Amino acid sequence: MIGLFDTFARPLMALIEAETAHALAIKALKFAPLPLPAAEDTRLAVRAFGLDFPNPLGMAAGFDKHAEVPDALLRLGFGFVEIGTVTPRPQGGNPRPRLFRLPRDQGVINRLGFNSEGADAVLRRLAARAHAAGIVGVNVGANKESTDRIADYVRQIALFAPVASYFTCNISSPNTPGLRDLQQGSVFDELTARVLEARDRASACAGRKPVLIKIAPDVTLGELDDIVNVARRRRIDGMIIGNTTVARPAWLREQAIAKEAGGLSGRPLFKLATRMLAETYVRVEGAFPLIGVGGIDSGATALAKIRAGASLVQLYSALVFRGLGLVGEIKNTLRDALTRGGHPSLDGLVGTDAAAMVTEKWPA
Ligand SMILES: Cc1cc2nc3c(=O)[nH]c(=O)nc-3n(C[C@H](O)[C@H](O)[C@H](O)COP(=O)(O)O)c2cc1C
Image 1 (cartoon, rainbow, N blue to C red):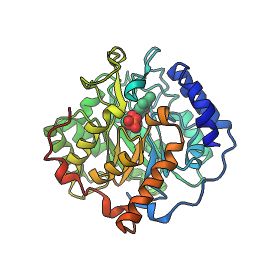
Image 2 (cartoon, rainbow, N blue to C red):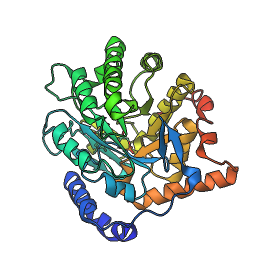
Image 3 (cartoon, rainbow, N blue to C red):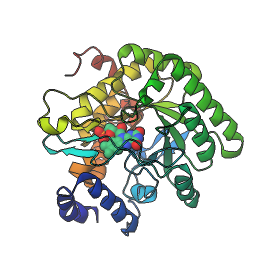
Image 4 (cartoon, protein in one colour):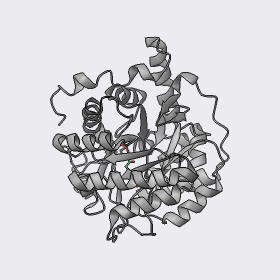
């Protein structure tokens, strides 16, 4: 099924305008009769944030923004799915076109700007699958016009607590003006305090749901020091490193498309995001686990993220260029690495390269 799709449908998708192709992919996943996934190699299982992941590979936020196909994605072999970003009230996002492929760089630029059907619509979908198996995280954000953005995160944590496996607070999208200021100093401290308070209040009815913070790969190392200090002091459950970058490496081949405003993801993001992951890992000192995301497009790049400090990984952009067969390919590479090294699980590989990486020259 996946092979057929990758062989015939994906090359056609490459010819269609990027956002239309994405809508078609969601539709296909909604209606395709997907088989149950093959039994998972138990060595790939990861325990993190108090949750048991069957494998470490997750679908990153942004693919299934409105929770239309989380179960289809789980059936395709992802170990977990992060839906969203969801905003409290529905909003349309930026005008189209707002999603661009950089084929020769295997990159994507998006300035969607949190197009969201809104929390109520997403909640109805998640409630309808509340008893289904599988880890589905809810990535929450703020409405563009909101006057109290932190309140938008707080409200949604209360609302989604009964149906979310975990929460991600997305404070790093470059496409909502001012959103990334939530990563700064006392504002970040207030955000973490209030969202964790909301989570604790909801725990009595919904159980204790892990809360993660997703940061930009563009924060300075000084800002990262402050973020990690607050995250450790407030006992955040984990961090995701990271979101798309506003940087445009000079070596991009698609220079004309690179001028589009928005966040860059995919292969051109790999080095920066992986370095920031290692920088975070050495600062966190094991206080909580990290999810590594940004530019994973092969088994080798997934393994590199784990060695840089990721307990779990996520991807999105590479699916546009490599197709769904990538999911199985990555899991095979991870399995082979465990066999070669004689490791019983991935735990032994997490962060093994981090200390060396942070001494290297900063990636261009
Ligand atoms: C089209 C698109 C939409 C995205 N939307 C979101 C989003 O709504 N929330 C979020 O936290 N990240 C979003 N992201 C960022 C991804 O989750 C991920 O952090 C980033 O793309 C790097 O991973 P990748 O290189 O594997 O794509 C989006 C990425 C893309 C390409």
